[in-house]
Amino acid sequence: ALGVLTVNGDAYFNASDMNDVDLTAGTLQIKGNFTAQSNNYTSFRATGSHLTRFNGSGAQSLYMYYNGGGQSQFANIEITNLLGNVTPSSNIIIAGNLNQLGHLSWTSVTVSVGGAVTLGPSSTTTVSGGFNKPAGCSILSGSPSFSGFSCP
Image (cartoon, rainbow, N blue to C red; front, side):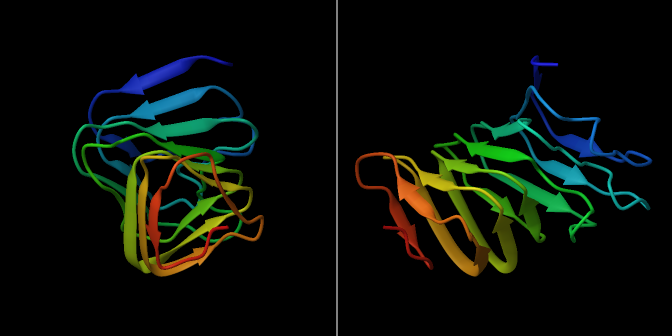
């Protein structure tokens, strides 16, 4: 469905197993931390046009216990948090696009983006870990701040 679900706090996913048809469209907005942790490999698996938006007003963390190929993943991510830093604390897979409009940084983990990476004019992105972005990077407008990777 194309609906919007807003979580005003932390989101904790402990599903028995999501498959590729459970989260295929719509938007999940998270204002707190995100955790996907269970004894199953796909406790959170978004595909298709599904968008997960991190739009909190303070620090937000992202954690996926199982984060390899065919396991937990985001379809598309949008970061709009300008008041706090969004920080992955585990390897993260984004099958589609990363639209970075807020503050995002990570160390000692790898973020892999299958689609495009777009940096917004007021965004700040600091990478001290791995960053796989085979589809490249572009700047929407203005002068975003970024370090630890290249973007035309």
